[in-house]
Length: 527
Image (cartoon, rainbow, N blue to C red; front, side, top):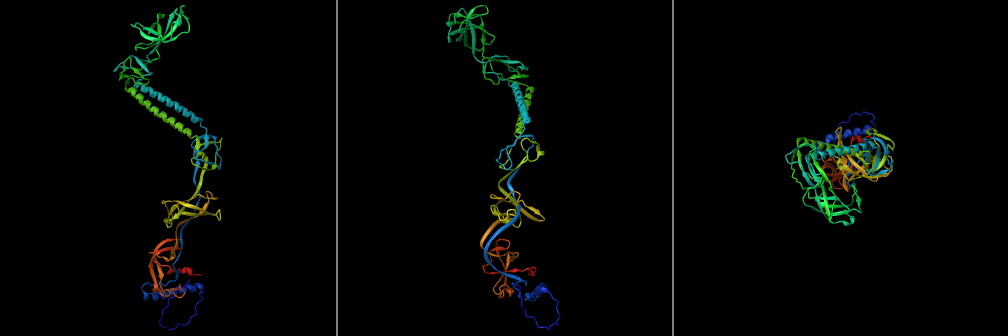
């Protein structure tokens, strides 16, 4: 470094009396020189004016081109891509634990099966309660809207619209079908005299006239009645005219033979519709002979008591169903599966152990090691240089000589301010991490923008307002670094680009080969 020397002619004066000065040493001589320069500058500068620079030491640096790259450095601790501690709120014995430490498991893989016998009982009880509630609801609906218990034909109507009925009142009778069967006995007639399909005239009760039917079956041989008659048995089928019930009897003539006595009529099925509650009958539009289907609403029996019963039953069904669903869902909690895909780092419980809900802590720990991540804090002065996708060079003291490459995944805007200084978290991902492990402390250098062959000056050459001191021709002495004519130093504004810790890019305002001046701190001149 060269000290700036400023010359000025001074008026002759009487030489002072010689006085021996104390020995100052090198450091004292440098400080004394600086003070003398300051005194000389105070005498000379008022005469210069224009673009003169202050009489302080400067370093002359040529404006040159070089490759420039922006980096941001920091440190952080490596973490897995994701981690999960497997816990449970259930208490009970572990029946199965089909995995081991260092196993790779997929998301949803079975880790633990706990004893669920008590929960199974709860599920069954809840299911029974739900069925009972549903049955009560159906009965309540039946009380309001009586339905046909079977499909068939209405054979009797016992109430009418406007009637008041009580629970248990018979309202109508229904027969299941129109086809009747009757077994007739023919004394002293050989069974061979009859055949299937043979016409038969059937006389029912005291009705006038006969109903036509046909033989559907004939006995294989003769039989003897209780009173000693030898008879043949013949079954006849016929359509119910709509008024016949099981209380009627009949006789038949087949060919030239008459049946013996009165035979019972077999009706396929019948049912009586009863009122399930007390109320007033309405909307009963069915008549005798009307056909109905099973479950078809026949009428309405309305009262406030019936409607209250129906609403209460509906609420009971909803409550029971919720309880059953909850019990079934609780049962799933006894099968513990992996929430993520990854590697088992810890297995703290095994088959045969007993867990006591949350107080048991983590049953196992799983790491997703598909990549490693780190969160580096970047100060507010450098955060603008960091963008997602930038390459990051990572090193670890634990692995000397090894260099790893990562990528900036995310730049958060959620900064943390401490003592007036703000830092921002930057997430970095390493997909190829070799021997690195979660928990290691690493250093990272984010590779930012680059400029090849950029026109650069030292960062310290730029003062506030983005200006530099440019040495014009004649400003420097023969040594090329000493300012001999401060009038040839120009303060010039420049446009700036990227910078690293030492150099900054100048995009306009300077030309390659020009010289800029750097102020030298007096403290740096010591020694």
